[in-house]
Amino acid sequence: LITGASQGFGVAIARAFLAAKANVVLCARSVDQLEKTRQTLQAEFPTQLVLAHPCDVANADEVNSLVENARAALGEIAILVNNAGITRDQLIMMMPEADWDSVINTNLKSTFNCSKFAVKHMMRKRVGRIINMASVAGQMGNPGQSNYSASKGGQIAFTKALAREVAARNI
Image 1 (spheres, helix red, strand yellow):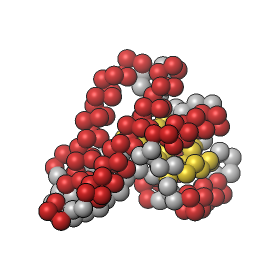
Image 2: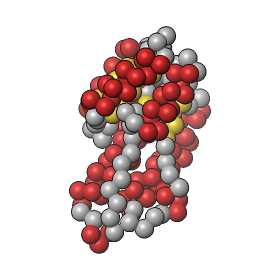
Image 3: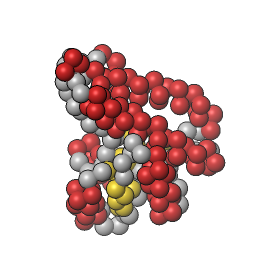
């Protein structure tokens, strides 16, 4: 299951999994772009299952539906890649609160939502992998990116804490 999978890193990650003979569920908000990506990847990898599920990963109800639909189609989620991310760069004194909220929700809250619903099933199976796509900006910070840097720093800390929670269950 790959979030932010309609373009860029998400598509590259999907290609790598498909080349390794995995089936994938692609997730993104842009319905049209997501379907185009699904069709392209399905044509490239006709023997693999490539599914698309539009979802706002900042919305817990939509993520729960995403995870349940992915499990129904694939039987399980072996790997979750939290790749969804946006930027809304602006110096903090000029940054609208909406830009802060949208970056934190898309980049950090989505990691919580997707991990929460996927890990519940991984814990039962006692196996799974969660890959969170962070950034050096989360360690170093970038001017004009206080929202992005905070979201990625939070994602790094979240990853460390979650690993301590679930490592004993081979996740």
